Image (cartoon, rainbow, N blue to C red; front, side, top):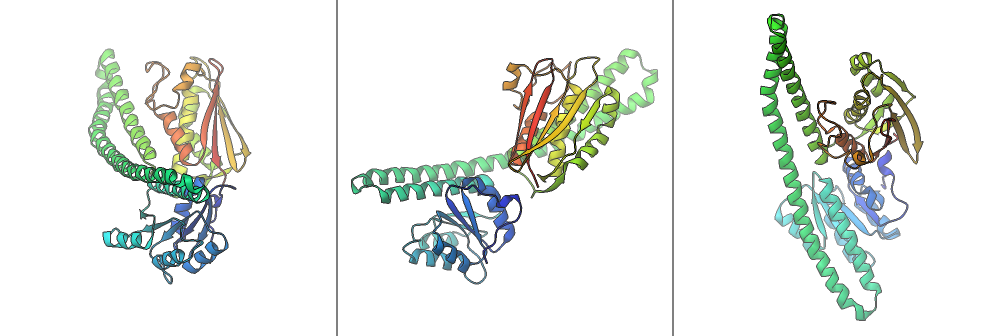
Length: 401
C-alpha cells in the first residue's frame, strides 16, 4: 500500500530528484522524510510489491530501502530492481539495524550503493543521500554525453567516489566527536553543579541566619558570591542546551499552542514584569509544530532580553504580534529597549558574544545563540531589526501545525 506520512513532514519540493522511501515502519518513514525532505521530491511505500509498482510507473533517482520487511524482503526487492534494465542503475541505499559485515557484504554484492544504520543519524543520512544523488546525476550525464568525453567523466566520477569515501569517514569522525563532546559537557556540568549548588545554598543560609549580625560590606560580599554562583549555574545550563542543539538532539514534534505557552511564560516572569513595571501586549497566537520545551526556552530568552535591555528608569514596553506566510507563523517580539548597533548585529547570534558590559547587563552570552538554534531546529529562522536607542524587533518563523 502506498502510504504518505501525515503532517508537515509530508510537504516536499515541487522540483528536484525523485526519492522513494520503502519501509514497513511508518515511524521510520516519518523520520527519514524529515531528514531528506529538503533534498528532493519524496514518495513512499510500505511493501516491496508496491515499491516495484511505483518504480515501474516512474523510475526514481534514489531508493532508501528497508532491508528487513515482511513478505518481500529488501534483498528480494533489490534483486528485482537489478533484473529490470530500466531500474538497474538506480542507486539503492539499505536502511538496516544489522551491523554484521556479512550482511553488508551480501547487500553490496547484490548491487546496493550504500548502507545506513538504525537508529539513523540525520547528518550522516543527508551526506550519504546527497552523495548518491550526485553520483546518479553524474552517471546520467555520463550516459548522455558523446563517447569521446566518457573517459574524462569516468575519471571525475572516480574522484567523486573517492571524495565520498573521505566525506563519509570525516562525517562519522565528526559525529563521534560531537557525541563525545556532548557527553563531556553533561558530565562536566553535573560535576560542577553539585559543589556550586552547595556554595549558593550555604551562602543563602548565612545571609538568612546571620545577615543581620554582619557588617554591611560583609553582606555585600556574600551577595556578590551568591549572584556569581547563580550566574555560573545559568551558564552551565545554557552550555548543555547549546551542545544538545548543536548535536541535533531532538524529540518528535507535536502541536504547540503558543497562546498557552506564552501564558505560562508570563506566570514564570510575573515577578520581573511587576518589578520593572512592564507593559506586555500579546495578540492571539497560533498553534505551531514543534517542541514545547524548546519553544518555551526561545520565547523566554526573547522576553527576558526585552525586560532586561532597557535604559535606566524606563519601563519596558513589549508588543508580540503574529502573521503567516507559506505555511509559516511569523511571531514578532518588539521592545522599546536600548537597541543594537550595526557592529553588534554581526555578532548578535554568536555564542558567548556580549554586546554590553557584564556590570551593566547580566547574562551568559548564549541566550540568542540558543534561540537561533531552536528556530533552525524547527525548520524556521529568527531575524532582527533594530535602531540604537529605538528598540528592537525579533521576528521568529515557525511551521504552522
